[in-house]
Length: 207
Image (cartoon, rainbow, N blue to C red; front, side):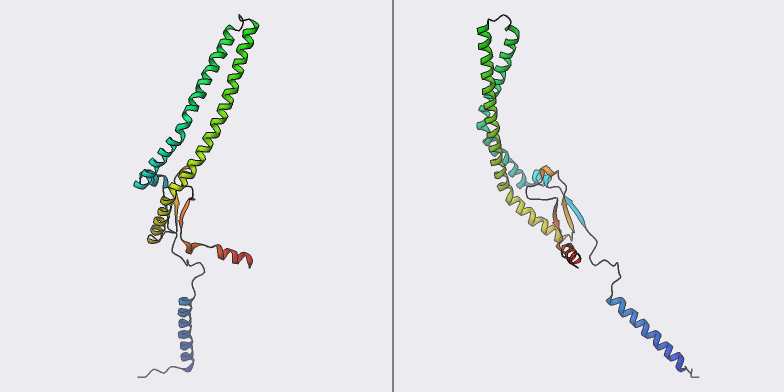
């Protein structure tokens, strides 16, 4: 027995099939409004101070820097010893004036006071010179430190770039204390450039 399908039913069926195909095509070409276009963020951290303290290259570098520091400050040790000797002499003379000043004649009092004043002046001049020398030496050491650290920084940059890409990380951050950070590093030591929204923000601002 053959089933007869009316023209009206046939038209409705064709419209339904067409609608289904349109919805399928639209779902394949149009992403959902909030559908993520990038994989979820993958964040990691590294302690660069520990890298410097425990890696072979870091330990060798630290020993080299400590040797440079010892050699640079060695010439200043004699001046530091002179300054300490002056301080001891000032303390001794001050106690002597306080304990015996009442029994001295006027001439001896003036002599001792002049001697104490001269010691204070010498101490002030030597202290100022020593501080200037220490600052100059420290500046030279900082320059050498940056020079010594440069090869390790370059190697770390390369290593972090490779690890970041291989592990599909979005961001890798340094969690060591700020004072221990390498001079040319900021806390974010690797970031996926594909996640940079700067150009998009500029376009939105200028729109």
